Length: 85
Picture: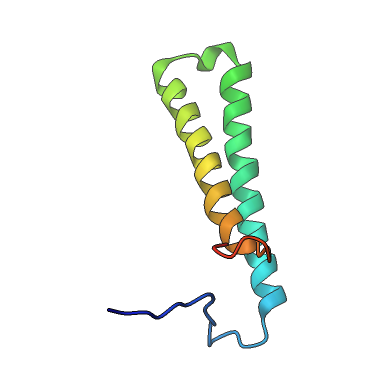
């Protein structure tokens, strides 16, 4: 049975680029939040966009907001009291 535990990984192409990678992933995450929030606000505020297609688009954007917040939030948090994060 395999007992190997890996807690982190190293990107070999960026050996000293942690601040660069953090800024890159932060920019992508913020663009995702901004775009999905804009879609949600527009669909909710504009009465012309209250059709089924935009209803499902708003729900898809809400789902994308939740998924991106969960998947980006887990690897970026490292708390000493929570060993599985």
